[in-house]
Amino acid sequence: ALPICWSVDIGGSIYGSAIPINEANIAVPVADGAQSGRLVVLTTDSGRIKFEVPLSGRLECAPAFGEHTIVVHDDTGGVVGINASTGSTLWYTQLADSFDAAPVIADHVVYSGGHDGILRALDLATGTLIWQSPVLGGAITGTPSVSQSVLAVPTVEGLCLVSRETGQSVQRTS
Image (tube, rainbow, N blue to C red):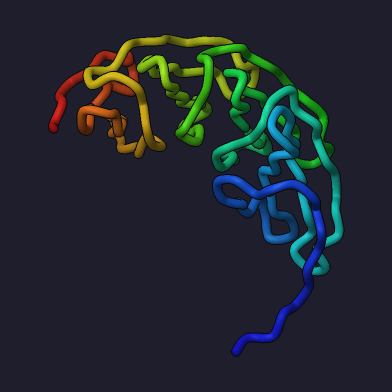
């Protein structure tokens, strides 16, 4: 058995996955009760809380990380960009009513899909909407996978391939 290196009580419930943001820190999505959440960043060497960012809704999926920015969805449809070094909020964009899928980041773009079946692309630096497009197949139920030119988006009716450039559905499987 592996020895326990450290443990920490962060309160609340962890939903989604914790993600490493560099060799020294890990980001943990925490749901505090039925209506609020926070992002907790811990040091990997001791589990010390580096910072906590309270959010307006519960976090029910993993955050994403890219370009020194942590991006989280909350269950009110908010997408938040957080500075990975300081914990300061860089931007907030209100989108769908709720999310089952984690955001993904590729080439300075955040891809975000919700229960409303609309996939959105946001600028990572500002949170500004680049495009939004309904996907074939209804509500987005899982985290999109990114390739060079398309996103593979899981929906209630199957998998939809979407152009990263335009957001248009290219193909759907069931």
